[in-house]
Image 1 (cartoon, one colour):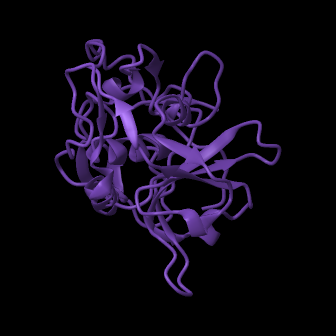
Image 2 (image 1 turned 90 degrees about the vertical axis):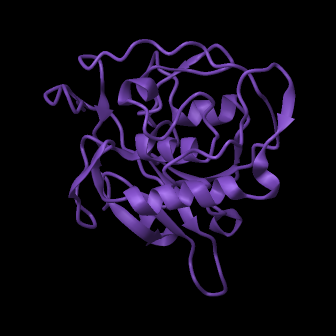
Length: 245
């Protein structure tokens, strides 16, 4: 494996990132920041889901987080804007990552200080000793529940995570763009490799995918810890393991 970065392209990378469809340019204020009260999010209106999918649909073929050119073709690698980061930025567009915006620097996602006081690497989906990844953030912050390999329960804005054969590691992630409708399969937007509205069955080629149903419900709204200054030399994007495209 290797760690790669836009500004440090020779470093090795460890994970993949995939996100189901769409995000908007500005994050939905679903998670107000700045007080210690427990507040309901905007889940009743599901506006955050629309925002996340809009972002995913608009950025599925971007090759870097901050530049729309050059654009990747379907199935093409995106080593500097991988799966976990893509999903994290979509969730941030929906207002579900307190203190982060979808256009914040990559280092802010690499060293994300959550309101619970823990630091997360939101560029990461794989299990790496010493790091808390995107999946850990979702679970620790009660943003969602792992409902297993059940695409019928997936809604737009939910997350799909692909595990290895013994479920000891996470290999890939994506964002659900469309739920099951009649005979139509749910679809997923993803990065590295670039995919737009790929059917769940094709995305789950190895049979080890789980749906993470995002349902913020009632969450604690706290002011996030101060983010560390951006250091381009530390920025890391996570390249992918060998995985069906």
